[in-house]
Amino acid sequence: MSYDIIVVGGGHAGIEASLAAARMGKKTLLITMLVEQIGAASCNPAIGGLAKGHLVRELDAIGGEMGLCTDATGIQFRILNASKGAAVQGSRAQIDMDKYREYMRKVCHNTPNLEVYQDEVTTLLVKDVNEVYGVNTKLGEVFEAKKVIITTGTFMRGLIHIGENTYDAGRAWELPSSTLSIQLKELGLNVGRLKTGTPARIDSNSMNFDLMEAHGGDEKPTPFSFRTDKSNFNPKQYPCYITYTNLGTHGTITSNFDRAPLFTGQIQGSGPRYCPSIEDKVNRFAERERHQLFLEPQTEMCTEYYINGLSTSLPIDVQKEMIHSIQGLENAKIIRYGYAIEYDYVDPTELKHTLETKKIKNLYNAGQINATTGYEEAASQGFMAGINAALAIDKKEPFILRRDEAYIGVLIDDLVTKGTNEPYRMFTSRAEYRLLLREENADLRLTKYGHDLGLIDDEQMSKVEFKRKTLKDATEYMAEEWFTSKKENLELLDSLGEDKIRDRVKLIDIIGRNTVTTEKFDKIIPSLANTDDYLKEQIIIEAKYYRYIKKQQKQIEKMKKMLQMKIPENFDYKVIPGLSNEVVEKLEKFNPPTLFNASEISGITPSAIDIIHMYINVKNKK
Image (cartoon, rainbow, N blue to C red; front, side, top):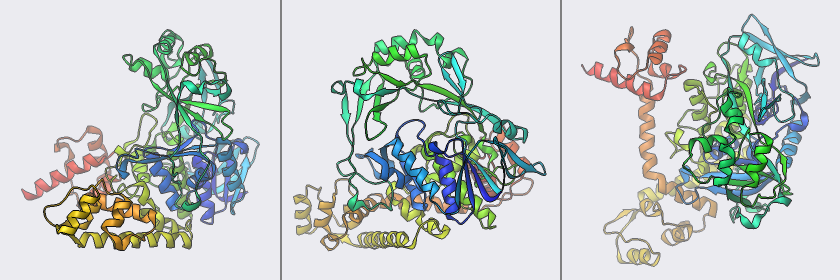
């Protein structure tokens, strides 16, 4: 049988890739090992978090499914860093893992142009050495396609470790993909080995919640999706709990280092530095007397809890002793033990910004196969791969987001230009234009793209345009209007508990104060008091960042102008101080005509571009 696009793997990347391609009118086949596990949350029962929430909101703004599914199946919603600025806040939701999976499976089964098939893809069909045109499966099926997207997660030659015990699996007790990565290596792709892990899950009936600190959701929960009706969003929320390891816990762990696969050489792959196993934390931070653990309910029934912070591959007898040493878990019954998993990945510098491989035509990679970690990073990549595969079939320009447009742009640019030797995780610090790339303005930044691609309907686009116009009109008014130091204004500020002014200031600088609330806003600008509460909050945020954004926009324009600079012919990169030998070698090999072309070369970092730009400027002046 023949399809436009085949997606291999039904995880978070595979789902978004399949849905995007099918919704763009392409006949799509999703092949997965177990249909029941489409959308399974392999690790923690949560979506979003710092920077990760940005990815989900951006994905939603363009037309992805993750935000909608989270709103429909969430059992706790919180804004992290709520006391800090909007640029570093992050939405996070606990999900009912069972309902999340059921929701995604139902959507996949009921999306026009999308077929779901259960089987293992064993090999790719390749012609002319470097062009994919389909796949072979374990059951002997042959499917041809114009494009193939691989989203295999941890399944390629997956190997699970629990103490000295190991077994082949892509996820606990699920069969791995044993041949696909071998073929990718034979085709010339740089294939490596990574490691990740997960903690034990425990029976809630055996936990002593009275000895732990409860953490609930926000009183007024904020939905992830811009398409969710905020006025009717009031899900029932369930608490998480905090407890800590102690010196007894650490003693149990350290006395069993000789049985830890992480230290015995049994595990070869590199693990995630920002989400280490408990044995790694105890080893690296020996001076710490305790580590925080966050216990999360996995479903609305709250019968099984995930111990966030206690990821481990220690033997099961050690896991038991370790868990029972923790306050509140003294009598905990373990339902599933923690484990580490090693798996194959493809060096992401093998990819173009479209996520198509450079060496093999029509083949795209998305998700953990690209050395990332996290549901949100995977979903974002899958979505972009699905869109670009569909556009390529129609011979249209690719859809590539810049670093100043979206966290998704930062994620993909980091991967394909810098690469990584450990599982990559998104952070707000990775985005140099994070003041522009806030969660709440993702729709203003990106929804037009989704509408143009046919992934966002006219009604949603109209809502976004109304929001844009409202904020634009209010911002322009505040930026032009003076707030003087006349008596009634000073009395108003005093009554609101605001610092007085000595001279006139722009109204936007008054509203932009950190102390201004929607209630104060109504008193200061009564003409806008009838504005919708949600939009009023957005106006205040715009005011807070107004001056900073102006500066960043100038920087972006300067950067765009800089990238247009031509590089002189026969330019000698060796004489430029500050460039690594690797950067010089790549620049000499590709001989880019402009700084923009140089920035597109894998491994050429923004700092390297800055150095070259400064050197050319100095040379031109001389």
